Length: 445
Ligand SMILES: *Cc1c(COP(=O)(O)O)cnc(C)c1O
Image (cartoon, rainbow, N blue to C red; front, top):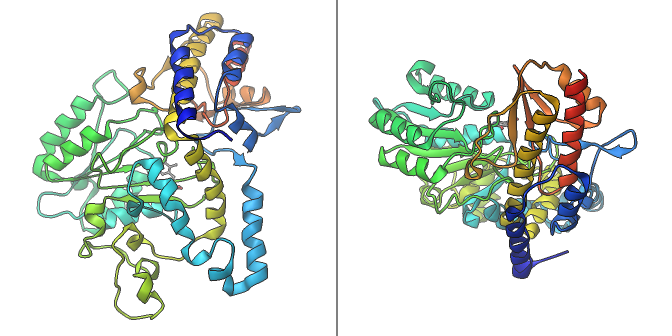
């Protein structure tokens, strides 16, 4: 496998050259891009579902990433160690379960741009969001509002509502959904900042999906965090559609907290373990309220089984339970791949895949007459690996016809398809072929 600095600069050169070229809608052109792609070999490390004997065109890696071939061996290792050692496996297994979560600190810190003491793998996404809200949503007096993006993922909104209830507040008193300008579907950074200023002393927390699951818009986390802090509010982000998609600098941007799942771009399997980030300035503050569990207690005293909680001074203090080793075993396989490939390299390829998809969609529109309105921002700084497209006059049957042709895309009511070309395993040829099938389906149905 390829490594290190020379690899990075090779990727850079390759994609800089590509960005000057003009895209073409033909198979040879797509194959040529693939043949020069320095990350192309990663595809071979995944199991790709098949349809009539060929690989499907998989554009739903933003919903559930594909299975890495190493997953089964990783699970078997833990099962074998369990069989061999029983309870002694906590210390004697190849990857001791007692400190299992510590194996992720390095990789997760690179993934989201954090210190190793600021990231931990634990629980699942919505659980982590609740744990973080317990600490960081502390309404006081008139400071009680939570600002979030338009059309958030419902689970996040339910979480905000339940914390309002816990504090004896109503949703109306707490929830503020940032609305786009009339006739627009995505948000402008300047408007978000203005809204934060308007809310001023009433604002307790800004909590956005860093990439909105519906529109694919990536927000300016640094600017939003700065604006929130200026008003004395916290800023936290749900990275479900961002981790493994776009390089982040959570620590540098001074973000207070974040959480993410690992089954979307991170390919760790359905319901796999999730991540949490808490800025170092907070992890050392043992006064912060939190829901405590024994795995957050200092290691030295954990097994003294004392009645008083003595929290660690890292984000690990927010852990409740011992590690879900079987989920984590698969996550280790995929996180190592991200560390090796490098988020910056993946991002470079991703920008080109998404740009090629945008071009191919314009070709489909031209050749089939079907109106396709891309609602994801055109500016590459404001998007990752996903394009959300309004397909006027179509219904859910479209997805059925595409599936019959071996194409996996995702449908959101009333008429939006979401397409995610994932740099670890999607190819330029996938995108070209998608264009052919879309044109055919739109022309015939
Ligand atoms: C996928 C997703 C979820 C799902 O939550 P789980 O707890 O993993 O089931 C929640 N929030 C956002 C923003 C998501 O994209």
